Length: 324
Image (cartoon, rainbow, N blue to C red; front, side, top):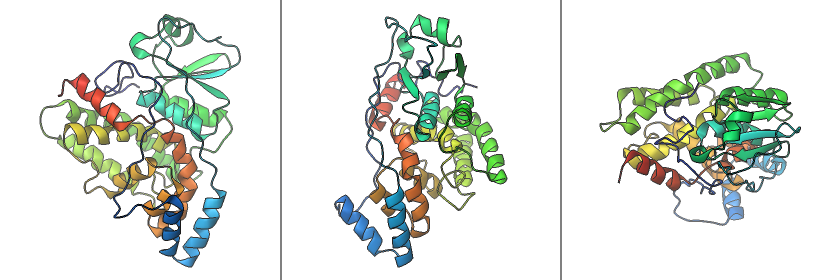
């Protein structure tokens, strides 16, 4: 189902055309003094208990190396030739600005499939005719070309990638968490519409928007074994983070409304997924969640690889909404 908020075609909240993602700076917590990364790490260790320090060191040593920014191809336009379709290559068709496509892209990165699933950028403002005619008749993104078939719909693709490719699982084995995951996935379109309605309105933030944010805040606090929706990073976070990222930017820059105010779980969620530094992660987390955070750093990197510059998103959204 495509939400009215982000239809992944030219719309107020999705730039019509864009090059591959501009690296996005990490959201930082204010500090009275900036230290070099290794000194920040030492400082964090010195303020923690011996047991936490030992576990932190072990987790840091075991954490995978964060991958460099992927060299992405330019978006294909109406004048671009198609790739050699159905030649055995698995291709994920995306628009670099589209939060729905971002979901499947994050899943691909998280499972370490950069060498197995090729990213193909599509310019939605000038999309090639062959994409609809030969690849995906619905003419939307994302879509996945795999085993001589093409599949679509972002959440379906996330589940498909999780089930049909090697790599870490996107859902835990715990039955209660699986059930809660399905509830949250069903709620994504409703929450997006509730938040979008206030962005485009001329009045104050609507009650339904506040209620949606409060529900997300409560959901993030349900499990205590980590800072994410199911405790540990999962497909639920993949479903929500592209939209929470954008709504935080838009509500702050357009409505002068802080979606994290009095919502500590949302604030922590945004801080964590917005930064991929291990030393910063140590400082971001309370001692009790330190090890969980270190183990999640490589998963967060799957998301940061897909981020756009916040200022770019805000400027283009204001322009499309006619806001000076």
